[in-house]
Image 1 (tube, one colour):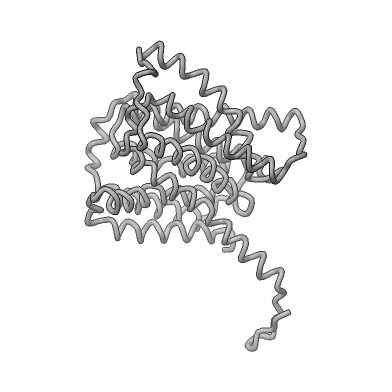
Image 2 (cartoon, rainbow, N blue to C red; image 1 turned 90 degrees about the vertical axis):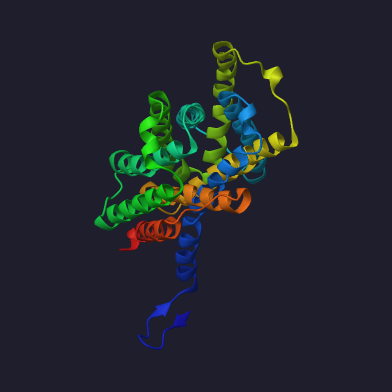
Length: 316
């Protein structure tokens, strides 16, 4: 038991630790977004040699193996009701659509176009969190999301030409919008299962459910595009890329994303998604020698202010 000198108010150690743990784990989604930010750099290491849907399947298959191994260690005897199993399967279907449209949309657009459209994902999450989960939409939350969105656009405008979006293939834009909307749905619909079980189990079994669904799309991709899987050249760079996607971009990132929702609302978690393009820009500059652009610092500060407002909105 601690007593403050100025007010005499006692603060119990468990209460202080509980509040600290809440803020600590609220940062988990930011770590997930940072891992996703590295996908752009990894893609430069020979990623384009693999067809989009095949790559998505490889990513989820590796992630499922890692997650299932870990979850068996922590929850070896867990059983689920039929409704919860259906819930995991539904999440698997939603994330399958999200990944398939993301990879196909990326193949039809440029990095700048994809980055700009990605900014819509947190907005979708906020809307779904309010309508489906009944989460509270406060003025502080709205201002925070607005600032984070504006800051991210400023960062991206310093790297890319915003006018390029007008020249994007319509089909690619539509696919990326669907990818963002379905990822928001994956985020929001996962909340009840995360609360009922855990972030680790929800991420694991939704990932496992997505494996056969994406596997079924691989032959369809081969037939419709005439792609031969035998033409894929396995290089060290490709192996590293697939491992990064599966282990870090899927297993670790999906767990961390859901971990944040054990402590805060989906609307709050969504704000950390804005870290993805920021980290991508930093890694691009550090590892690929790309220019950050004159607006990087300004946009980063505005984005950080927005994220701070959102992350502290529940205490306002």
